Length: 261
Image 1: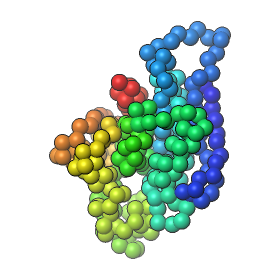
Image 2 (image 1 turned 90 degrees about the vertical axis):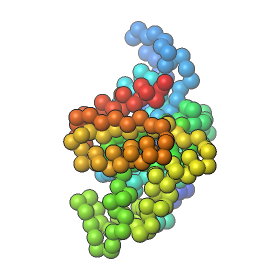
Image 3 (image 1 turned 135 degrees about the vertical axis):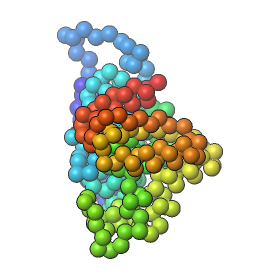
């Protein structure tokens, strides 16, 4: 398994940042190796997005890369909800949906189209995976959200001085913009998917899961009901589990298998 840490200048962030990457193309001669249905195909790319307080590489299911012949790309999104924030140098959605895929195409010949470029995330990263794929359907063909922090309706109409257990008004305002209108903005995945459906454009395949003991369960059920209500096909699964790595590792494997098909 070839492992890279790449530092690069990102115009959307106006600074240097780094991402980590696994490429399973270094085959050992001393270990028996047989081709499979996965290794006989062109290598695809799976973006993995970390959650709030996380960083690139703190969630690395290497077996996904090896078994399914994925190049795994793990960017750093800080705590920015993978959105274009209000401040200069905080365009994380642009970085993720435009600059990083372009760099992979130019440098590695990977992520050449949506049919070979997928995205998955947990918690804040689950929100980011769904939002980014819907914002850039010409880049990402499939998206999986694990315990996604689909919090738009909860933070809508917060006022200066308000806060919840995670963060305060200033933070949410920086990430999501005007909280009075956020539910109608492009930072709401529901707005993006509805627009794609109404325009007749191809909607990325979506895979959504949440544990029945997770504090984000109802938010994921709301998204599931919304997609059902407007007739958008998707996979939704819930089972026993909390907001933890045991649940995320389980569904990373399940959804990777489904995404491959």
